[in-house]
Length: 455
Image 1 (tube, rainbow, N blue to C red):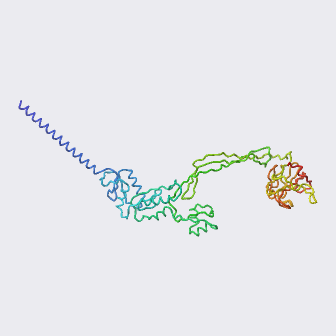
Image 2 (image 1 turned 135 degrees about the vertical axis):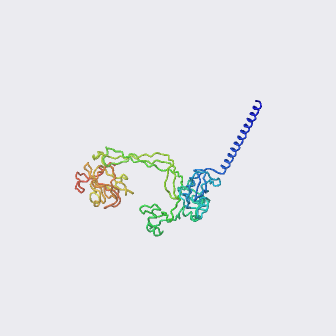
Image 3 (image 1 turned 180 degrees about the vertical axis):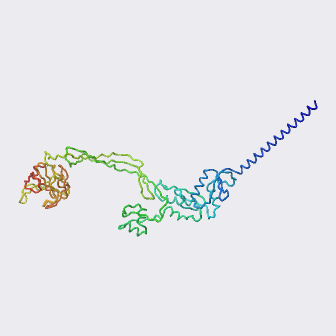
C-alpha cells in the first residue's frame, strides 16, 4: 500500500510539470504574435488610398486632405488620369500628408510635360500660372499700392495654389499683369467728339465703348475719360476714402390755406431757413473711379426752419374798403402827374427813379385781367377791372406775368417795369378810370390815381 501511494505521488508531480511547460509555451507564442502585429502596424496605416492605372500611388490621411485634393484637381490645368479612392491599409512609404504631394504623384503617371509653380484662382477659377508665389504677390501688391487710401482690397476672391501645372500654360510677369488688369488704355473726350467718331479713331465698336464705360444714350462731354483696353480686367480694386463734410439740410415749403384771402393770393408768412448737418462718409472707388458714397455717421447741428406760404382759397373778389395799394414798392417818386401836359390831358401818373427798370409791378386791388399784351403807345401793358367799378392800366412794361381772364389779388405781381411803346425812359404809367363796362377801349372818364392810392 505504501509503494502504491508513493508511485501515485510521482505521477502527479510529472503531470504538474507538463502543465507548467504548456503554459510557458502558450505565453511565448502569444508574445511573439503581439510583437509581429506591432511591427506590422508600424509599416502600415489606414487611410484613403488613391489608385491610378492599377497602382496605389498615394494615401491621404483623412477626409479633409482628400477634399483638398479633389479641389486641387478641379483647378489644375493637367488632364488627370482616372483616379479611384478607397479606405484601406497602405504601406507608410506611400502616405501623402498634403493634397499637393498627392497631385504630384498622380501627375507622374501622365505623359504631359509639367513643372512646379503657383496658380492664381479668381473666384475659384484658375486664371494664370507663375513660376513662384513671390512673383504673384509682387504683381498684386504693386497694383493695389497704386491706389490712394489705406482701406483697399480686391473685390474678387483670390487663392494661390502651389502645385504642378502644364509647362505650356506658364505666363511671364508682363502677361500676367495684362491678363489680370487689362491694358487700361484711355482716351480723353475733346470738342467735336461723338461716340461714333471716337470709335472710328480707336478702332473699336460703339457698343463696346458704351458698355465698357457705362455710357447711356451716347451722352459724353468734353474732358470725359473713356477706357478702351482690348482686355477687360479680371481683378478689380475697391478703395474707400473717409470724408468729413458739413452740408445744408434743405427746408420744407408748407402751404397754409387761408379762406379769408382770395384764390390766387400767395404770401410768405415765414421765411424758410436751411439747417446744418455734419456727416462722416466713405467714398467708394472702383479701379480709381468714383462709384458710390456710404454715410457712416451723421449729426444735425442746426434744425431747418420750414417756410410757410399763405394761400388764399376764397372765390369772393370784393375790393378792399381801404383803397388801392401802391403799384411799385421800389419807389413812390412821381415824375409826371395827372392833368394837362404838353397841351393835352395826361390821364395817369408816371412813376420813375434811377434803377427802376425790371422792378416788380403789383395789382393795386383784387380784380380780373382784361388785357395782358401790347396796347399801342403804352407798349406792353396790363389792364385790370376791379369790383369797385374801376379799371387800372399799367403801361410800358418789360415783361408780363398774367394773362387775359385771370383773377388777381391785391398786391399780386403782374409785370416788370420797362420802357416799351412810346416812352422817354424806364417808368410805369399808371392810369385809373371810373367804369362799369368790361371793354378794353371805352370812353369812360379817367380820374386822378392819387384819389385811390394810399401812399
